[in-house]
Length: 377
Ligand SMILES: [Zn+2]
Image (cartoon, rainbow, N blue to C red; front, side):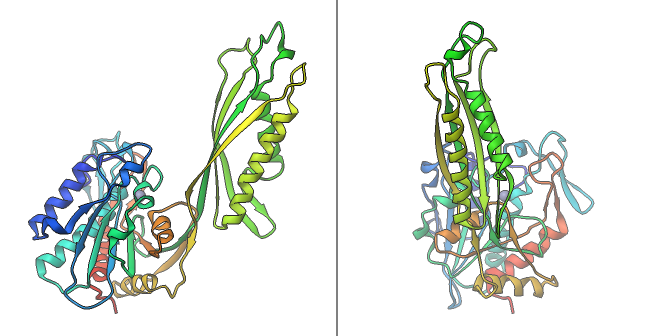
């Protein structure tokens, strides 16, 4: 699975592989479906999410096992080889794709093992989302009704198998366009309005007032970052357009909205304060895009309790974690399906140094099988 190319939007080959394995193990075609999530993606994409439903052999609440099947583009061309207890890419210019073929593999392994050994199991939904790496697109736009109403949901995407992610931050992105007015920078600079000057004043305002980087106000906390700035073509023209892209994150949705509002105010103030000789001011357009909502599961949540007892049954001490990144679990939980995220041996993800820890991966597979069969104590 690591060797199969499949960056976000190009998941058809890896999906075909998974489906081929399931069909060979006896899963009927009628149990296998794709939704249309890719149709709502900004990149389009070859296929939607892969959803497979297996009827239970025991009467118990339905369980969902998931792991996104796309990788970052850097993984395309990976040549996985064993190196001791790790898997690395022989081609040093690529990443490996353990993020998230390891997670997709845990789910597939659980299904194949159950089918091969005819193990008793509750009704199961096997869910392989697309386009996680470009903004949780598959999980966001999943046809949730097709998931069969699972009561317990487990996602594999991470490193240490003892980590149990029960919460994650929420994030918004901001596309900011500053409009100034062009003029000759030597002959009539006073007729122009510099969008660069507006940008500079706004960024200074945000940094001086503690809204950029780590943001702490009273007991509220979050982060923000301006990660992209572009504008201007020549030094002899007053720049009339600068675009910036920024993000804001917080576990507290209301505080995140405050960060976004502080950005809007800072840019508007700056735009008003830079004027031409004739008194015209600049202006600013800000598009706020909601990327994902924060969530936090209780330790009593059934998915959390089952995951922790499966870990203990495999000899691990569970470490509940709340992280500052977005996960497919953010969207599943927002769809009413509280989802725990577990590790599967990934390390150094999104870099050419990426590796997969074989022992951790196998441990994740044992945990996955326990959770798929409902065999945790
Ligand atoms: Zn991932």
